[in-house]
Image 1 (cartoon, helix red, strand yellow):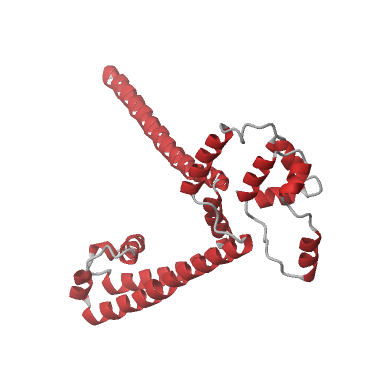
Image 2 (cartoon, one colour):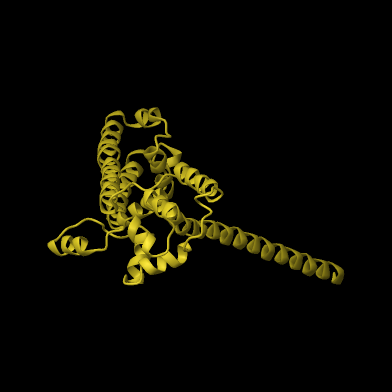
Amino acid sequence: GVANSAYEERLLGIIDWFDWYIMVIDYLRFTSAIFGIVTIGRFFRGFHGQPRMSVLVQTILYSANFILHFMIVLFFIFANFAVAGYILFGEELDGWKSPGRCVGRMLLVLFERFDYQEFNSVAPVSAALWFAAFYILVTLLLIKTLTAAIVHNYLEVRARLGEPGMGLQRQVLEAFREALWGRSFEGSQRSVPYDDLLEVLSADTDQEHLKRMGNLQVDRRLKSRADLHKAERAQSLDVEYLVSLGCAEGMARRLLQQ
């Protein structure tokens, strides 16, 4: 009896240790998944270094308010159709017997990964009306509205910036050309460093404004007389002005071309 009792205690201790081990493994999986999601934010921050990707990121940020309200509307419509599906098909179909399963099935319906015949075999008329209403309201109206709004915001961001942003292929090609040009006679001539030239050009400009310009967050359109007056009084950036700052003539022409 004593030996059996000691054996049971040791066995229970081993089982508790395995339970703790499984809990740690689940916690590690959860934190690893969260880390992967957080890493996406770091990628978004790094996208600012590529102009066209930065335009796309600014479009997402510009659309964030609309997407939030869109998700609220979609949630309530989605929940109502899930409850309707639970009432119509819950008694006959195993996948619709609980509210939790209904949500999963509705996701399959949303992405068109379902068999309509199982609905039709239970309640043909009700299933047709239910699916037609869901398809028209969600797929044709809401999803298309979201797409149209994001495209509109993308065009708005492009209009604010005045350009679509340099593509990745062109950026790589320009970097290659810059390396070749730096090895040429004209590119190897002594000139003011880029950092010093940028510091001189931005001496009278707000640093926060420059940071926003670098992240493509500034509206460059002339919306008022004050903007037009400021643009007219601004120093014209030409070859003579860059040369006066110590820049080589060949490099000044290249900078203006870029």
